[in-house]
Length: 93
Image (tube, rainbow, N blue to C red; front, side, top):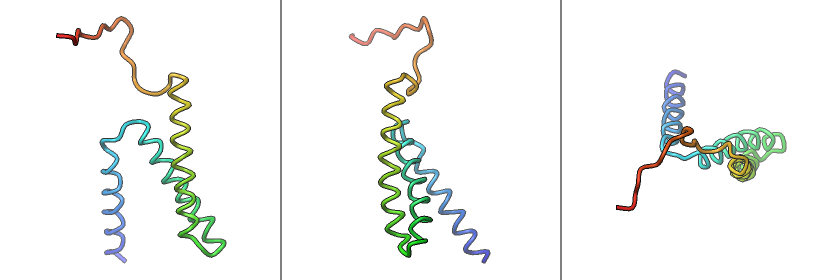
């Protein structure tokens, strides 16, 4: 029991550390895929095929996360912007 808990904690840490270098679009798509996979696995277990449910849920969740990110970018809620009055340094040397 103790060994399986340690293994589960290690896998969780490795999974979270893989998200360190993602931009906001990738983070939202990954979050949607993770949530969709979990819900799909639970729903699929009721019908007797949890693996297929998790696979379909992850696909739908990932697409939903990506579409949500695109709508947020169009509204201007996405990436951080420079503060007011900030002038970008001249880049054309």
